[in-house]
Image (cartoon, rainbow over all chains, first blue to last red; front, top):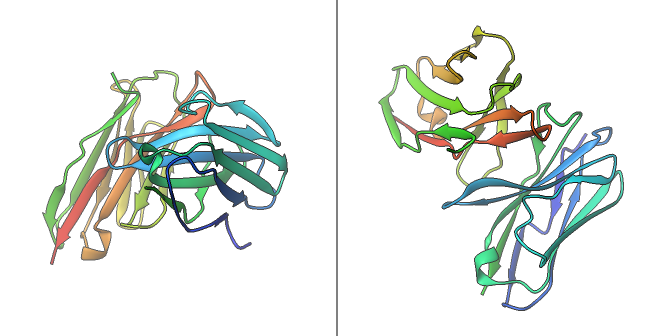
Length: 113
Length: 111
């Protein structure tokens, strides 16, 4: 398996623009997680899905953030409108269960100017 | 109180020494504990997991768990410069059936 795939790897955008991050989990993994990592706040869980259903979105910072998982092999994290404070590395991870080993994608480095 | 706490470091040790990384957690019901390693600019990757009290060894790495003290540690023997990275402690959070990550400890191994 190729592992967790994320795209794009880097994104530079201007404040106010819409940003869409994409993730393909490992085949057979029922759980998908979206994290945000910054120097100040570390690795923060934003939302996670089980069998394509959002289970816990308590980490989503505000209504500007939304996430979907239309099928078992694809998920998106959207920020609209983006702000400079959204600049961070966004990781997608997948696992067999909610508390099992998580396999992380390479991350998307987002810079909002 | 944070759910998972780690000393941010940096922790600096000479090559060949033992590096000791520590983590405390607040959820007494936690059953699963993980150590991830993250190189600069890369994604976290699992080093070890531990479920039972005591020690678990894997090569140069030993994870230690004390549920009574709510404490988990990672020992790296014969530290190498290639071990220089940030080490993230992750703990199962029974309140939400999810894993909570600590802020990580930066380790530098000097050649």
